[in-house]
Image (cartoon, rainbow, N blue to C red; front, side):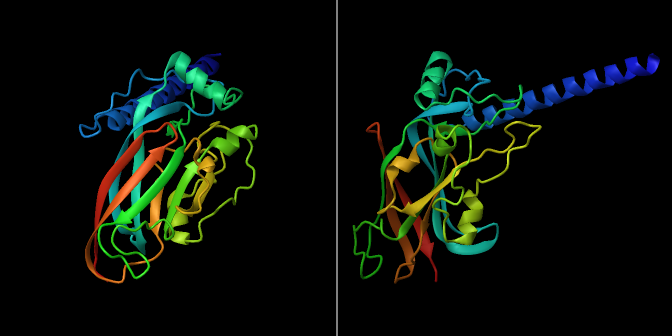
Length: 262
């Protein structure tokens, strides 16, 4: 009897510890996700996580945040790529439920207490373009669009939700570049015990010229890169203009600079 009480107490203690640990992780994630002076975004009320929706945090895009342009990934040499994310306000309460209903995200029953915490953009992208302020090569003089040589890569959860929370064609539009594919890889297997420990997503990838922007519904707001499939003919500092237009009509433009040394 005494042993049973001890085991019960231990289980209760472990359960409380796990709950406290989860709350701490969520608090830290929300703190670092919101505490950016340069974002100038009011996140709104903290969303109430639904037990019936796959996506926990839907956002309305209000700003583009450019992170960097690099030519390495995990110390592996790659062609240059731009990483950016879309920032915005959380949908809360009735507004969040309305967005979930719009995309049919209303029948995902998870293990209580476990949530997919990445932010997902409720608006799709209408157009992305990159232009160079100087001559890039013979085919791309100053001011010309580089849409035919810049590859868009991101993660969309639309197919997974639309198909009843099942993965369909996991190899869809898989990028040819192996190193970049590692960066945006999202075809993980969700844990049976944790419910949604790792999300399933469709890899959306094509050149800016050929991409179907209908595939950019429900993008992960942070997992987006633009990969340059061709280097310029010259060397030195190049300035680019990155423009992203949302289907809502919002348009974001940011300057990007990169030093080509080889």
